[in-house]
Length: 141
Image 1 (cartoon, rainbow, N blue to C red):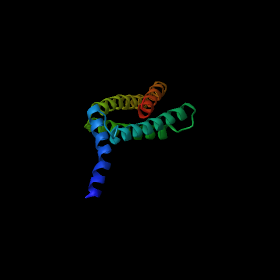
Image 2: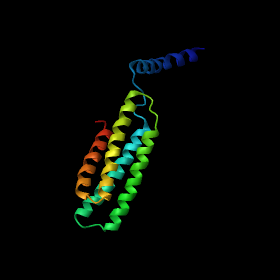
Image 3: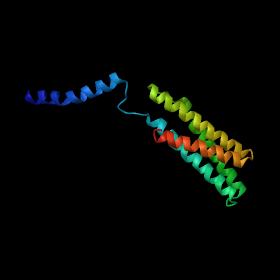
Image 4: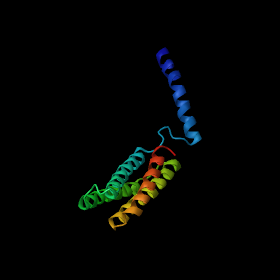
């Protein structure tokens, strides 16, 4: 019987911490992993497209290779956008993070569309800005 009493006393501090987090509106798990993974995926796709455009400026990538790269990154960003759109958030913090992520993923996707339409300079400027915003979002800023 003493061992059960000891277990109950040992569990009490953990229970108090969970209740305190619930009452304060904080989640012990933080941001949803699906959302943070989507942001990381968008950064990867955006940075790949960005690198392709930078290489294009220096004539170090073939036009066909760049087009294929941009097409692949367009698809990756569109998949990430769709994943974010369909994800149901569990709390206001995750909902805000999701909204910010969707905005920046759409900006990156639009920049890739601009590049595919032929305006590589504008696309690179916009893509650089959106990838930077995604990195700040990933870092918690």
